[in-house]
Amino acid sequence: MRFYAVRTEAIELTHQALQKLDEKRTGSRRPSRALRVATLYGHLQCRAQGGQPIRLGCRELASAWHLQPRELRADLQDLAAIGWLSYTSSSSGLCIRLHDADAVMSAETEGQEGASAADDRARQDVGPREGALPLVVSESPERRAAASDWISRFTALYNAHKPAAWPACNSSCAVLASRLQQAILQAGGAEAFWAVLIRALRGMPEFWRHTYPEGRSGVECASALLKVDRGSEGRGVEHWHVFCWGDGVDVGGDVAGAAAGESDLQKAHRLLYWSRDHWHGRGIETSKLDRREKWRLAELLEAEGEGTPGTAAEQFSQPPRQH
Image 1 (cartoon, rainbow, N blue to C red):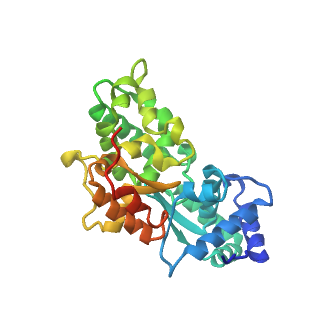
Image 2: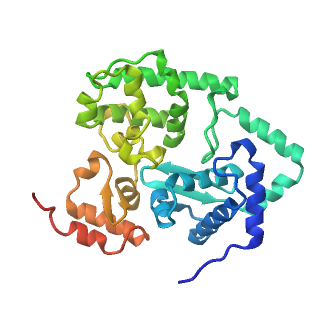
């Protein structure tokens, strides 16, 4: 096994970059953390091939490195805020693109006044940068107006598509503004998120549809969409109920279906994920697949380096046991 050493200069560069984040910094402020963040960036450099995006299961890597997933996510968020990488997150994991760290730092040191002015302009931008930390609602009039529109749309769609047992929600949904912003960022934009929201409201599990709303208010039920249950804590925004329930549910003409021309590998990433020692499915669509199709898709992922080779054949070659 080859070990890839992190250069001392790289650790110092990382330390300087983390110090510049100031109040935007997510993780620990201990100087030794620069070693971990630099190691993560070096690990990603080793996995990158020809400038192609890196697919990463945050929870699996955190487990392999004996870290909490929130720690690894904090490292990634800081690296994104520094500008050394950008990423998008979905139910199939993270898709990460690396940027040249030396080039980013050089650009920052060539005139602090110009960088400061660029930061001011960026903070006025209504749309958050891909992979960056979500901005707070109160940052600018434009963002406050966008957040107000999002809350109104969220409330309207919730009331229109909620299960009959769920109480209606009114303007008190404004307390969910921060989580709603995170969900929209996660989905890749407001319009994409509305489609996911409709699917989630129509496709939620039986317990949540009938038992959960008993004795709860509309805002409490709406809040349940934007969080996970205790068994999924620490798994990230992409595992919030709204994304888990909204994955692969057919809602007719209300939302667009799967993207045209989806490859088998993209389908495999969308429907299956690896956890500990076997493959797991996502959503109702996966449950409807026969075992041979799951076997085929899982083997595509194994060929890409995910999971343990041979598990797909072992897991899906035989019908599940009947108890």
